[in-house]
Image 1 (tube, rainbow, N blue to C red):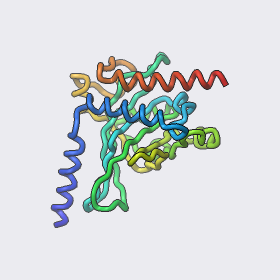
Image 2: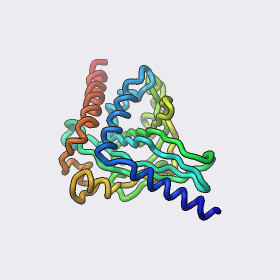
Image 3: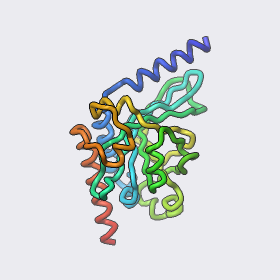
Length: 230
């Protein structure tokens, strides 16, 4: 019985990860980011987005619990172009991590990570890194809370947010792992490429990435302008 439950969890997980194409997931990521940024007074503070080196978006992170709970999701890392102009092509990433206390069943959550400095950005190039161990992570402040939480802004390398059932808030993700998703990268770019090449701006963005890049350009540019006008 126990073996069957574990096998069932792997089957469900495989189905979750194979649910859509990278092109569809890019559109979903753009929609998630746009919707979050339009939440009145409760979205990601734009002054933090203006300072972020990279943004990681994982739509529909799955939490499944049969015998052993876990989180599984696919998304994209977007970093600023090395020339400082706009955002580079999206690098497919995969996150997974053990969890405890979930009830039998599954739920879905959108996750957004802001990578605030170059060390956190460097970790995205690794084969695997663990949030909270290889890079410090904290629940990100929302809305106007950012101005009151300068310690979070100064100390954390990664700020984490989640949206589930319409509620958007900071979230603690210590222990979750993030790694390049090579299979998705090959599907998206039509050849084998590394996340290091993508994040360094050496790979041109595919047409399907334009909506996401446009949203990032829109809000980060606005944030920078707003910051300079203060």
